[in-house]
Length: 257
Image (cartoon, rainbow, N blue to C red; front, top):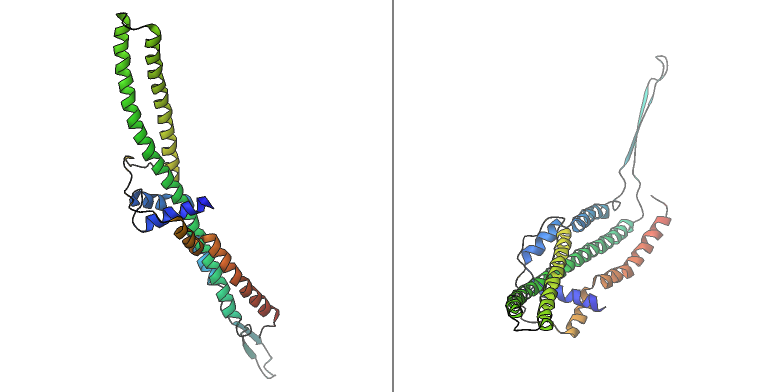
C-alpha cells in the first residue's frame, strides 16, 4: 500500500510540472521500452475487438436455378435474401459491455506504463545520487592519496611510526575499494536503465536533481489514490460489467429473429 501511494505521489508531482528527472528522458523511455510498445499494440487490437459483434450479421443471399425441357414450362430462377438479428436491446447491451472491457484494457496499459516509468525514475534518481557520491568519494580519494604520499616521506624520515603509517595506508585502500564498488554499482544501474530504454544507451549526465517546491500531504494522496488507483477503477468497472454480462447472456438465450 505504501509503495502504491509513493508511485502515485511521483505521478502527481510529475503531472504538475515538478518532476525530479528530465521529462525528455522519460519520454524517450516511454517510446523505446518494448513492454510499453507491446501493450500499446495489444490495446489497438482490443479497440478493434470492442467494435466487433455489436451489429446484426450480414444478410445471406442464395440463388437457385432449375432447368426444364423445351416442351415443358421452361427454366426457373429463384433469389432469396435473409437477414437474422437478435431481440431489441441485445446490441446496445453488448456494445456497452465491450466498451467497459476496453476501458479496463486502457487502465491496464496505463498502469503498465506508469510502473515502468516509475522504475526508470527510480534508476535515474539513484544514478544522480551515486554520481554525487562518486564526486565526494573522488575528492576523498585524492586527499587520502596526497596524505599517504606525505606520510610515506615522513615514515622514511622516521617522523612517524609504522602503525601510524599503516592506518593511513589502510584508509587509502578502503577509499580505493569503495570507489571500485561504487563504479560497479553505477554501471549496474546504467545497464538497468538502458534495458528499460529498449537496449538503447542513455546519453544523460546524472548530476543534479530537479527542484521540487511542494509535496502533497499523505491524506490528500490517499484520497486521490481512491479515485485514480487503477486496481480500484478496474474493480469498479467489474461491478457494472457483471450486470452487462448477465444482460447479454439473457439475450443470447432468446431465439434469433
